[in-house]
Each structure stands twice: as C-alpha cells, then as structure tokens.
Image (tube, rainbow, N blue to C red; front, side, top):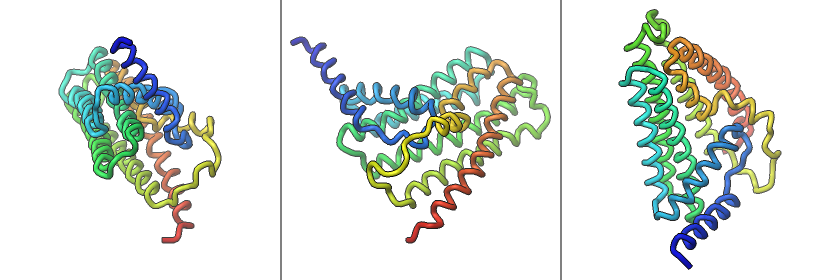
Length: 246
C-alpha cells in the first residue's frame, strides 16, 4: 500500500473520530455549526496527520487573524484589501475551531492550551476593533467619519464584544456542568437568531471595506446588535447563576 493511500486513510480515520467528539451545538449559530466547525474539523485532521500540537494550531490561527488586523489598520481600504482581510479572519477563525478539536482528538487538552486559546481570542477581538478605529481616523473621506462621533462606534462595539466574551466565559466556568444527554437539543431558531453576533458573520462585513460608507453602516449595525444581545445575555446569565449555590 502506497504512503499516499496510508496517509489518506489516516486522515479519514481522524475525521471520523472528530465527528464523534464534537462539542454540543446548543447555543451555537448556524455559521459556526455548519461552516466554521466543519472547516475546523478538516484542519484539525490535517494538523493531526502532520504532527502539529493544539498550541501550534492556536498560533497559526493568531498569525492569520493578526495579519488581517494589521491590514485593516495600515492598508488603504479597497475591495481587494477587504477580500484579503476577510480571508485572513475567516481562516484564522477556522483554525481557532481546529485547535480544540485537535486537542480532543489527541485525548484532551491542557490548562495552558485553554489559557492560550482564550488569551489569543481576547487579544484578537480587542485589536480588531482598534484597527477599525484607526481606519476610521486615517481615512475619514472614504468612510464618511469626519465627525469625531463616529470614532466612538468601534469603542462601544469593542466594549460590548469584550464584556460578552468575558461574561460568557465566566458563566461557563461558574455554572454546574450538565450531565451528558440532559437538557434540550440545539434550537434552529436560536441558531439563526445568534447569527448577528457570530464572529464568522462579523468577518463577512470586511468584504465591504472598499465600500466605505456601506462598511461603516454594516459595522455599526452589528455593533448595535452586539449591544442588544449583551443586555439579553447579561440578564440571562445573572438569572441562571442566581440559583447556583457555591
């Protein structure tokens, strides 16, 4: 049997094992469930075949994501630049899904790996809105942001995104773990409703970077959605944790 056939069989086996080791789809948007996680599964299988560790995959994710962030901040906005930014963010997001899947495929991750993953996610989230703020400041004619008030939009969006990230992470740590098989299954309606606050959908907005004002309004619209969802999430998380005894 040729080495190519053996490698293909090994990757197919890894994909099969990954399909049976997926996290719950509950509370996950349609994009993450049907686009990002499957893409991450293939990347995890490939990483497993070449012997990468989950931490190395996390760093690959960071490299793609921060290359895109720097492009937003430093490059003159245009349609081609927007395509490159979206591609970098989307690939980085897929690798972000792959690191956890690879860890499960290898038998479980480490506390250090989970820490690195969350630190990179938080840094990426924070830096991306800073990059948009810089772009609004550097190219006001392109984005229609001559009024200083528009510079507050990325700051408000960043606040909502970071508090949502931290609040969700802390809630997950404080809530008791549900027993396997307990609780309702994933809701399609909820998966659709969560699309406005899915990072993959947020990445798509950068395809409008060349459109200037169109990008500004699309970005602002997602910022308003992020603020509204944050209010709903905070109420839900506080209510859930209020019944938890420490």
